Length: 363
Ligand SMILES: CSC[C@H]1O[C@H](OP(=O)(O)O)[C@H](O)[C@@H]1O
Image 1 (cartoon, protein in one colour):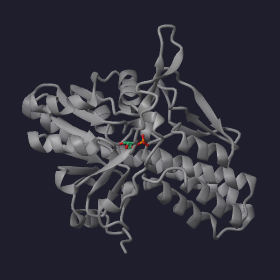
Image 2 (image 1 turned 180 degrees about the vertical axis):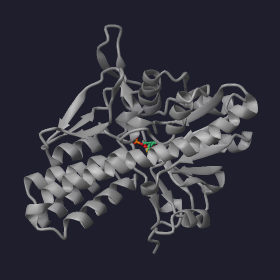
Image 3 (image 1 turned 45 degrees about the vertical axis):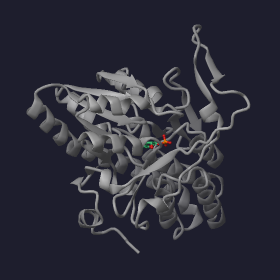
């Protein structure tokens, strides 16, 4: 997407071919700072610390992490060490193991002297494919928004959760790709941006993206979502996914399940935007999806800027209070109106998924 008119991606190789540039998303929306990754450890830390986040971007960063590792040591042992290190960073997004397995399939058969260049090429290919997949999701999702606009003739009110925009991918985003395409096509859209406690990816990242692209939006407390749906202020919900099981169950940021329940109770269509690499064909249903539990401090504290625009962290809770911080939940397929994929809008059922992805290797 564009930042101040400049086409920008969330991740890109440096021209010297020995590093990777990312946007440090932990500083948005208050600071736009680029960060250079020059080692396997730099890439692993960037994923763990959520400087990069979002299932497709986690996969892309891990792929470049393997390329950085091959610069250090192109032995098969180090390839295995690198993949294990990166796999251990975050457990829920299936794009991470998907990307690492693809890098290993590509590199393991090669002579060590060929691995470095091949790794950079494969990581770049993963990124280019992600951009194309998300653009296709955007086109398919655009048909839904355009149909709603034709039917009602008013701005289409889209609610989203967390950040599944271009910051969560290499470019375009998944849940927000249809929104950007509708906006660029002149279809009036308005986005209800759910703040998404505790990491606030909605308030901090989605709001920043939409503002930079000029898309009308309003940030809401997560707890306001059901109220807006009851009042008829939401035409559809579109969220992202970190892992979709073979039966259509969806693991996504914590709070997604509650929005799906409210949407079902109010007759609001609930769509999940998901590219093929985010589908886990090895899991029959969502309850087997590993749910990341992050540090309690993410719940008990929050970071923002003070009146002098200085970044500060403040504690929200009594110092003696503990906190539990599950980072994802699973929305059962029965609550999903449709999966917006690069191959079309699919019913969230195993048969429909298998028909759309006949090449998928299911156990
Ligand atoms: C397009 S994947 C976006 C997905 O990833 C986010 O999680 P996190 O920010 O913790 O990586 C969230 O679940 C989004 O829906």
